Image 1: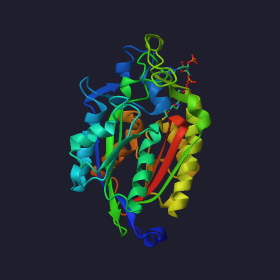
Image 2: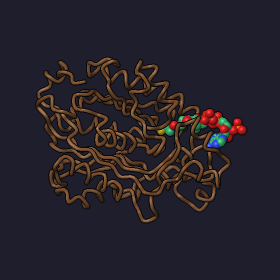
Image 3: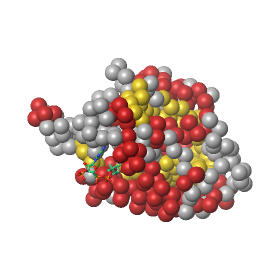
Image 4: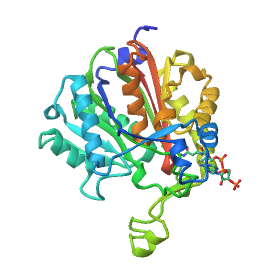
Length: 341
Ligand code: COA
């Protein structure tokens, strides 16, 4: 379906558009059946509760920056640009190579970016990619930057407790990236709206307790497993349904588009039951959700750009279609965006 530009597109003198996408996924596939060898769980339990069938696990030698760089290079290649064209690099991650320097600095160096190109990590957990998009859009629309790289990357396999069946079955590793640039027309990939939010009363529902200033890493924190992800699944589930619906509705309203006008929702791939509930609240049929969580699980900030790259390269998403991105994670931080492809 090809539609004419919205009034918002016509009126905005300078817009931001996605000019390239890329992704990187580890080769190792760990299926639900594989997990049953060491965990008291089953393929049936995991699939029926979450929709997940397998996840990718990064090789021992691979770091977050390696996957980020590969995804970024593919995004730059598809945009016909190089690292030297970038004015800003945003790496959304909660699993950086090290607490410092930022993973974005490592990626900056590996891409050969200019010294006057800014680079930093963004910590908004699974919401990180939407936060990065919003920031990139503001930089480009204000004229402060021309090309911005936004990467979502996670090696969650390094921070989950592989003996905790309530959390480890959900997560996987991966990286996705987009390059954004300016547009003064209704050219494809234009960001029509971005909406963000946080409910800080729910910080305890998804957290890593130790390793920060509150509880520095010690032999004791490691022995008690406080450096691993802890989650209250039901609290997160309820928050996700509520806030993904709310922030998506806000993004739709700001873009001047109704749910009927959305061709594809490319959501954060957390859980198919959460997404079905969100689709029903928004009045969008399930068939318009682009899902790949069956194969990759929840890759946090990487899940939307991985899904977007897959949908674009396979021709599922076509020029002129309207897309809705929405994500929520620890914080709980959430965000959404509407894009005209
Ligand atoms: N395999 C088998 N049984 C499991 C299990 C697993 N992998 N994980 C938990 N269980 C068990 C629990 O121990 C519990 O057993 P009990 O009744 O004997 O105590 C039972 O299943 C029910 O546990 P509960 O936590 O109530 O399950 P649930 O229906 O809430 O489903 C989630 C758990 C995690 C799948 C669900 O809460 C969820 O998806 N939440 C959202 C999580 C999410 O998406 N987080 C990331 C957001 S970015």
